[in-house]
Image 1 (cartoon, rainbow, N blue to C red):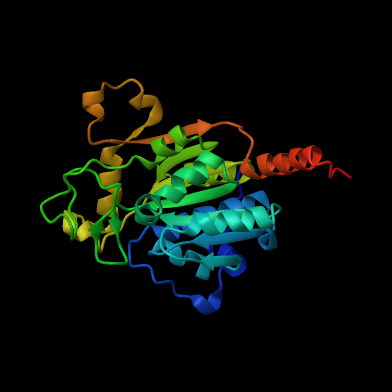
Image 2: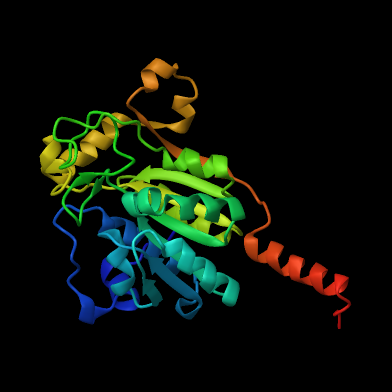
Length: 282
């Protein structure tokens, strides 16, 4: 049975007290996902000095500044480009990319697809709140049809990205999606992701009461959590439902769990073959 340390123990060990309080608004779900990630790291007994946190731009991208790990707060959409450089330079490091849905799937979409295709050895923790929370409440590419934002005051009419299915199709080794209400499932999925080789992604539907909720008549985190419970369907149940019943729903669960060789292993084997061909073997 998992031993859950107190919030105080987690804070004292893993957070930079001089950076507190965080910038997150009341009811924001990013703090919950941060807690899940830190608890997963703690439960696995991972060495803080062997983990690097990388992020781009956005609310969730501020997280590396709050945790007591080495980290990079990079440019918008480019977290995975920096993560690639870190991992190939020092393969012994474990990389966590903490990203938002806009950061990962919009300006960073091409980096996301190709990091998955290459099977880059990185764990992506993806906050999906359907909005650009930091920059004014614009709708993100994950926003379901009908949802409102500053760029869609009458409701989103474009088709949304399903990031989890995109990751599965592109070849990620592990893919899961939960809401912040799924406490133990979220922690356990992050633990699985951190232990696997190759690209792993855990997506969380996260409440944003300020930029998203108040524009969609859900001004508090509990209202958003109840809404998530209405629109989410467990994977096992979804497999038995006809497509028309799944319209407007979001499936949660584990979507991929496989063991393809990661980019680092492929790269090192490539170097070995190249040296052999050139007669440079020791």
